Image (cartoon, rainbow, N blue to C red; front, side, top):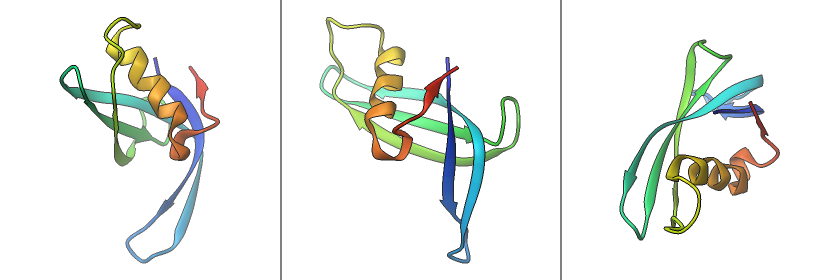
Length: 87
């Protein structure tokens, strides 16, 4: 499971860079029943170069789907990843 989306990132010089069709996936999950921290890896393409690491935090639904699926849904609800499509 992963997401695809065009991503804008700011480089070390403050310049905005555009990356088309980035491959976005959950790298790791940590947390407890109250809060999950999701480490997200963004790649230029599937199996390509890692261009950014991001993080989100969400409250898991203990009676819902598995935590990884919940993490992807939380990512799609985050402004940075809104509009991303499932792969």
